[in-house]
Image (cartoon, rainbow, N blue to C red):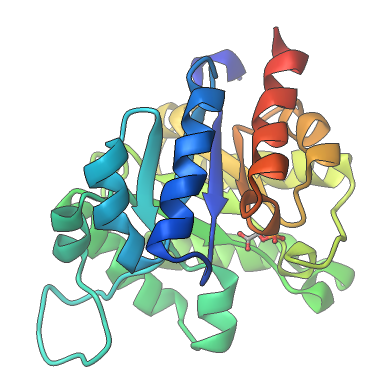
Length: 258
Ligand code: PGA
């Protein structure tokens, strides 16, 4: 499979961190560092940061997105946010089905499926997160779990609608723990996910789809993970919060690939 056809994407997931001022200072320093990058750089930020960051810095050098949205178009859903509001604020993409949403807020595959459908409808690029728990990993259930997550979260969506879909493979036991699967396992699971997309849709979509790896990515392991066959990018949590570690992830990649 032709890997070079896919631009690698490094996405920071800031989770519930940073005020407007902190985010603005971060971006001011980050932008000169990514100007030369041949990777696409994205930041999934808290809702309050989307509008001020897009107003000040645009979406060209670093693309700004959200970390969640509601499935409804609008309505009486206190505390929720609609996809069209994210588009209005300038978001380009939205993370959906992150394991923290699944585990802490009990989001089901069916709910995530409705969110992916809405995201596509309003023109937001969906970044669908999938991954297995430690138990499922140990009991060799990873493939079953991923197949179920992918087929249920994408149910009813056509190939055309999923044209810009990004997948993030994030083993739950690797998120924020410092534990990372073996490189062989990462390659195997990415290949498996691509195979499921091929089964559900087509070889064409499977070849096109960006599949990122996420879970305890650091400046020390980013380069080697990113160079694995079929790994099209990284979803970086903790290490995206500091300018030093995030820019080292971006810059080390550049060095290793030029
Ligand atoms: P981590 O988080 O890099 O801190 O493990 C990744 C994520 O939750 O997206």
